Length: 72
Image (tube, rainbow, N blue to C red; front, side):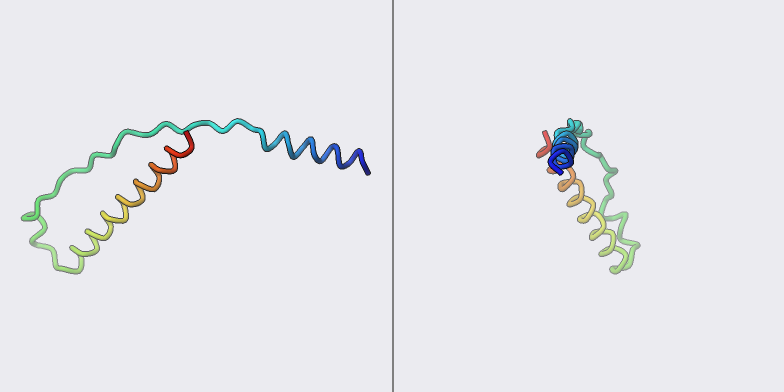
């Protein structure tokens, strides 16, 4: 029984000490600019969805950037 416990401790401790590779921070994504006049042809609902999509995308980029920075 003691031998089994020692083996389990060795297996668990060796798997926890594995090296974690650091992720490089990618270059900032540069999206093309859209002028307000170019969006005038859109109805308000698609325009709001587009704005929401852009906000969600920016927030996701910030979240992933923070995750990468905290792992360094």
